[in-house]
Length: 119
Image (cartoon, rainbow, N blue to C red):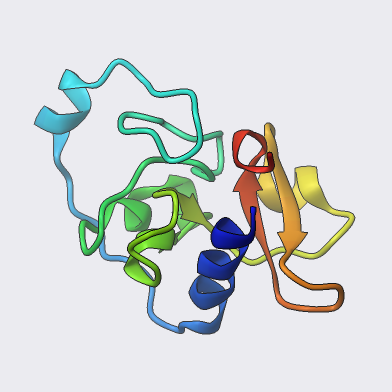
């Protein structure tokens, strides 16, 4: 959880978002991951939890760019998924289903993580 939160904090502090590469062939080969940062994870309806690669631009392609930051663009050792800033208490509205708004420290910057990453 600490490593995920640290990567999320770095993501939230960065201004530029990932680009929007379209790689349909890679998507076609995937069957959908279900764990935290697993290859082929599609994320929720906001794109939170979608698998991404460092510099790959996958998060710029989330629905309405709702989850434009890739954790590994800021911390290569973090679980790789798309995320976004959020406000505590608004998990569903800000993060979508199967995701939660969290912070590494009380009162610190917050961001959306897949529930599978909260353990």
